[in-house]
Amino acid sequence: MKELFDLTGKVALVTGATHGLGMAMAKALGKSGATLIVNGHTPAKMESAIKAYKEDGIEAHGYLFDVTDEAAVDKNISEMEAKFGTIDILVNNAGMIQRTPAMEMEVADFAKVVNMDLVSPFLMAKRVSKGMKEKGGGKIINICSMMSELGRNTVSAYAAAKGGLKMLTRNLATEWAKYNIQVNGIGPGYFATEQTAPIRVDGHPFNDFIVNRTPAGRWGDPEDLQGTTIFLASKASDFVNGQIVYVDGGILATIGKPYGEE
Ligand SMILES: NC(=O)c1ccc[n+]([C@@H]2O[C@H](COP(=O)([O-])OP(=O)(O)OC[C@H]3O[C@@H](n4cnc5c(N)ncnc54)[C@H](OP(=O)(O)O)[C@@H]3O)[C@@H](O)[C@H]2O)c1
Image 1 (cartoon, rainbow, N blue to C red):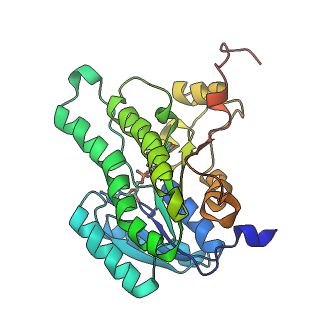
Image 2 (cartoon, rainbow, N blue to C red):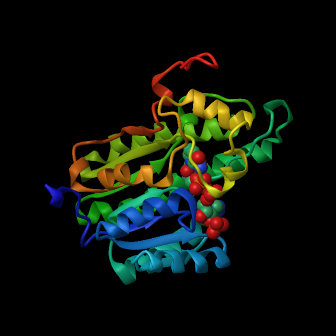
Image 3 (cartoon, rainbow, N blue to C red):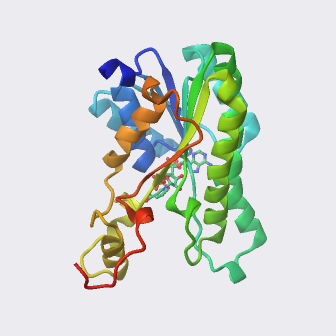
């Protein structure tokens, strides 16, 4: 059954894969045999990322461009297609969050988050879909969030964008199923990344909230996303379309429990 998950001969592109969750998912695709292309935005981070992939035995091909810039997306994907062939797998991972109370948020800042987290996955998907249609199929994985389902103070723009990304996923799945393109999403829960290191300590109120709120009783490890990524990128998911898989330790399955309850 291993061949169901084998990505040998496939070309995979992961946006925002210079570190964090994007890198963990990209490594999973590279280790499953795909030719791996990684996108990022900052030259120094790309340089250290390529070294990190290499240390893990993966040859990653780096492309620096802004995923919100349609002309840059078109130019870079054309170059990738010329060099590696059709993109078979796209992971729309690059994203941003801004925490500002809604009453204080500038409309321009709201629009910036929506542009990054919702419009850019659309333009990336639109651009790669042409090659996928011609080749007879493809896989698109949109990185959503628990905020695709739930609200939380100060993240109105992020929740609006990630909720929209869930519906974009369903709609593209509906439109492109006839071309054998599967469009699905992954909704990560709370993950231990460099950014969350300062608050992932015993006694920190947010750490205690997460550990208490998550049935699994822990933060996610970026490697926890790898199995779902391989599944949604591979033949194993050929009849799975328009779904969001929440990799969240069970948070969305529960209403939670009072503090102190075992
Ligand atoms: N971390 C979590 O717990 C969590 C939970 C739920 C959902 N998510 C989602 O998962 C995804 C990754 O999260 P993360 O925490 O790993 O993010 P991160 O650490 O902030 O990394 C973001 C990545 O996106 C790249 N990037 C930023 N702006 C870009 C642009 N305009 N064009 C191209 N690349 C750009 C960055 O590249 P450079 O570093 O090169 O600038 C970096 O590689 C996001 O969509 C996020 O919303 C994360």
